[in-house]
Length: 246
Image 1 (cartoon, rainbow, N blue to C red):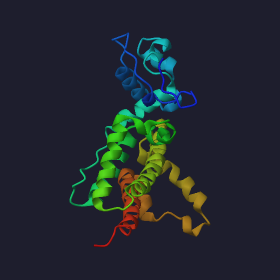
Image 2 (image 1 turned 30 degrees about the vertical axis):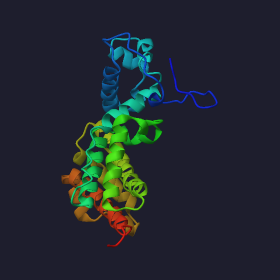
Image 3 (image 1 turned 180 degrees about the vertical axis):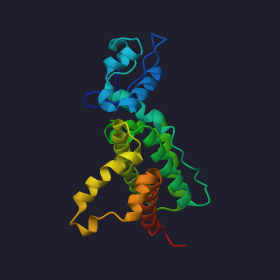
Image 4 (image 1 turned 60 degrees about the vertical axis):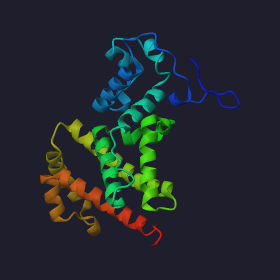
């Protein structure tokens, strides 16, 4: 299998850094492999995905998969790139940069909650940022922040998406716990709340306000939305101070 190499002769461990060989099994395409891998990741998480299990789902041996994808790490790069295409970034000429960045951040969060494994593996997915969809996503973000007037757009992007990734990772992990419980989110919170309140007893600053307890047990999704929006507003407030004054 042809692989790009560094000057010292070592192969670069990324699907995006090697030439693609012609498929000799038309019925088993790389696209089909990636789609099935994403379905498995969405259903059962990263730990449940293996080339052997994936091959069984596709009625193909692991050897056949390796003709299209060299390693599981490469498969994760491809999966990350595929779902990144779902993230919407408004055009650079949007009239309100904050509104546009907020939409991009919310879109990434929605994508991450559809694919709970995404924020957990994105930072470990090798050279995933070299994929065509990820490059398109990054280019649109760079254009948006540049048009807004940020002197260092890459730093501004890193600041926003460090927050978005962190919040999405925590939220996705919680929703995975909810899914595995077999309960609704509101029911699980209601069952856990007495234990949480006992743990907070004696810690005056950790007591959860009654209004938040009420919302958590009646409309937890709305409470999660509010918390995400609050933090994002704080980040954008800070970034706005970095814009050159006209």
